[in-house]
Amino acid sequence: MKKVQKNGRIGIISSILTDNPNQIFTLTHFCDVFDCAKSTISEDIDTIRELFQNYGLGNIETVSGAAGGVYYNPLMNDEQIKDFTKELCSIIDQPDRMIPSGYIYTNDLLYSPQLSKKIGAALASMFNGQEIDYVVTVETKGIPIALMTARALNKPMVVVRNQSKLTDGTVIYMNYITGSNNRIKTMCLPTRAIKKGSKVLFIDDFMKAGGTAKGILDLMQEFQAELVGVGVLMATKEPERKLIDDFKTLVWLDTVDTINKKINIYSAFE
Amino acid sequence: MKKVQKNGRIGIISSILTDNPNQIFTLTHFCDVFDCAKSTISEDIDTIRELFQNYGLGNIETVSGAAGGVYYNPLMNDEQIKDFTKELCSIIDQPDRMIPSGYIYTNDLLYSPQLSKKIGAALASMFNGQEIDYVVTVETKGIPIALMTARALNKPMVVVRNQSKLTDGTVIYMNYITGSNNRIKTMCLPTRAIKKGSKVLFIDDFMKAGGTAKGILDLMQEFQAELVGVGVLMATKEPERKLIDDFKTLVWLDTVDTINKKINIYSAFE
Image 1: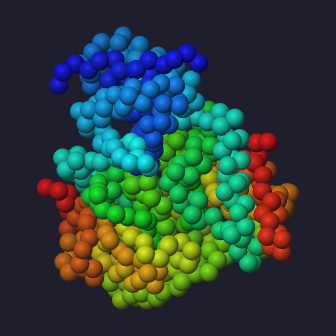
Image 2: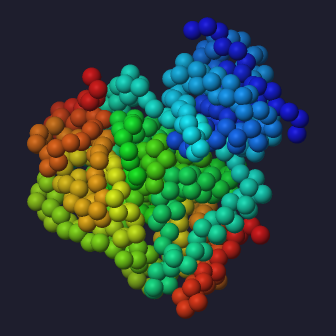
Image 3: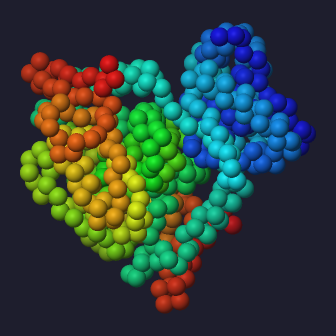
């Protein structure tokens, strides 16, 4: 293959970094790919860093030392998160999403690869800089946005289930009480899913009273892991007091008015 | 902002296309971003197309006509799929994955953002060129790889559940018989999840007798949708005759020998 020029290197490095968020690549790796000097790659990275910043594509970060290198952090800034959460509200507040019982149909947006990716990037951005070993979620609807958050952070996802399966091996089972209607439910997780001493971020699509998050807080103690953050796509205004003190949400759901067909929802960033 | 040079345009366009697989961008869009002529962007795209091809990053494809533009197809070629499936086998055949009952623990690899992305790209590549409107899966373990397949194809994902939820609205419920042990199970899907006349690709992590895939085939008929493909990460050699005729798998699971602690698994591409 003939030696590639600067614009070729910039294109390939930009693509590889973008496609592998928060994954560290050594400069030597790119030297090998392009058969060129480290100083050349270093200059390319500087160019890409400035480009990404100018076009709001996130940050190119450098890690020094023996395990050092460069990685892409798909960080959204406050303005981008604000714009995106307002866009989300305009998607969610459509009257035809209203289910007669007063619930909101959100499957299509949670299961959209494009939207779930953006939601994941926004959630990850809210916990930027925090030390996180796993992104934990509870089946089922939260899985896509948890996976996309895990992808943005480049950490493994862990799915807590309501019932264990034969392929789970040894499992820790726990009963917990849902916050909204005081029902007893079960959550379980294979013992090998989380290492002792880990720091865990819980991601879910919806929070009402916070019973599930409280359940995860308790379950993590059984794993000698620490819940260091809770992030949800949507939280309800009521009850104001949740079962956990500390969480972050992208949007707030105020009221669902089934008579006038009006969903009142707003960005948490205005 | 000062006018950006060719290498800057190449970097930004490469990043945006990579980050949005199978999403069409008009050349005019990039003309606006960089305030430059269409012919300039067109040359940039030619450069990127050649670059991506040379470095095995997938295809840059062009759509002509009024709705035309350019998009990134994260297509893996046969050699790349073969290498990746062999890598998968070496990850799966570790004795410590064996659960005493003869099952294999795969949660960690299915829930890994990096691996699930590659599995999704490989599965999507196997159905390249086929017309697909939705990627359908059944909860829970297949969701991440189905989402990543949907992401590669830029199509919505749909999750069939074992039980409906209040947020599902009107639902179609169906009983089906699992192929392996003749148990009756239930699958359900909101009526609004799939439009009539759609073409559907079913993705799952595991296939033994094919009962779930057969269930999906039947369920899709209720939605007047057509199952046009079935792709799984892993299928068992036995039973040789599955309940559906046509499916594709990345790896074959032959035997799980719990006495000698040996998992026999091989790539479907050797």
